[in-house]
Length: 133
Image (tube, rainbow, N blue to C red; front, side):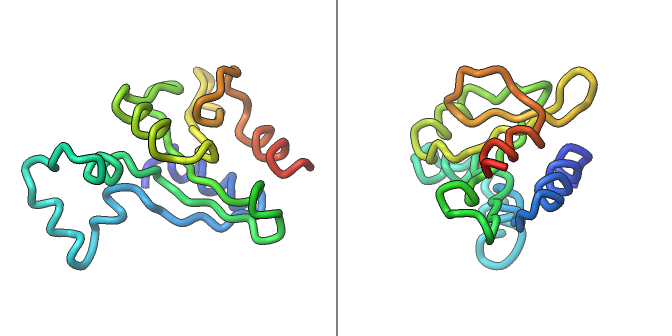
């Protein structure tokens, strides 16, 4: 797990979330699903693209109402950028409860909900606003 992943998980856990890895590499790491990694290229079907761009984590806060305490988390690459393909898949197939997490130039964790036009905010602030605390 890289630094961004570790810091994101730590921050979410500190806020009371249970965090499960759900990325393509996590889903295809064991069992029959690992055979998918043998393909040179995944088919261009919608299902294959959803699998390829599946968010990195699934977060659940057990004491928060489900509409506030359950969401996916996708890690952004450089800054807060996602590939065009990832953006399209997230907006087309995933709920608006998808939190994009990245780093600002000072290496602080920042986040924004998918489809939002707002500027990224510190991750802790986004979580507090989500939980209304």
